[in-house]
Length: 287
Image (cartoon, rainbow, N blue to C red; front, side, top):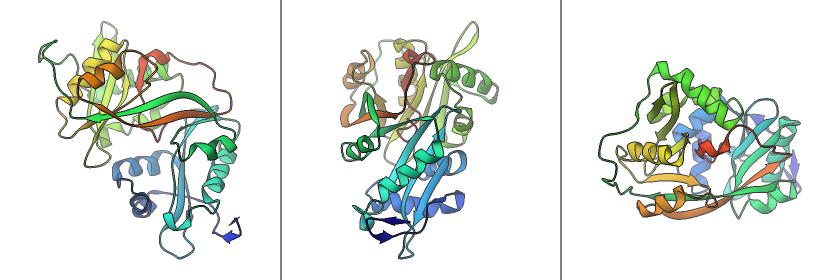
């Protein structure tokens, strides 16, 4: 593969054996190692990478995650610092889009990455703000949790609730949640599982709360509270700032907006599921 006159090996699929190289690539770009996230993506998604010509690990990587035949997401697009500005990021994204075929591909774009994605035909869909901080509890609803820890018997209900909300099957990723999450909690109604949420720590400094799928904002707040009470680090919530309810509440609870991204889509993105029940993503690597 040639990018801007610089020869690189061809793009190849990555697998669990590339975990150390993926972690090193993250660290090279100043990201946290995120071993749990990489382990999940290498096992359950379609990661691709380019080996460094100097033999030192990976020159770049990107991950495609499919949500059925017509929808997918792109994430973890990284190029080693020493190979920046040589077209490798574009080559990786073009490869991912070719593999995705006719599926619409979504992603979370930083200000730095957005110009590339726009050149490739991605269009903005909505905004996202990352809130991080030590959750400040409240006695308004008492200390008794309204949710409970999920069990193996809850998995079918969780998958049903998630598919109805998301509008596509995410089971191949969600089945891994119990192995990487510190907590998975559910709320119930007379019909069974009505909502769920997970807390997992992809790196040592922050606990990510997501996905959060709930029948209402009030239930989502209770799930967040039940998770955050048991977190040993500052928590992170990725929220749509144009959607009322949670952003202001999160700020009052001590979470500060620390970064902003834009969700973008390559291809048509028709409405599906019940998006008003989706409050946070699984991860920004899984738009």
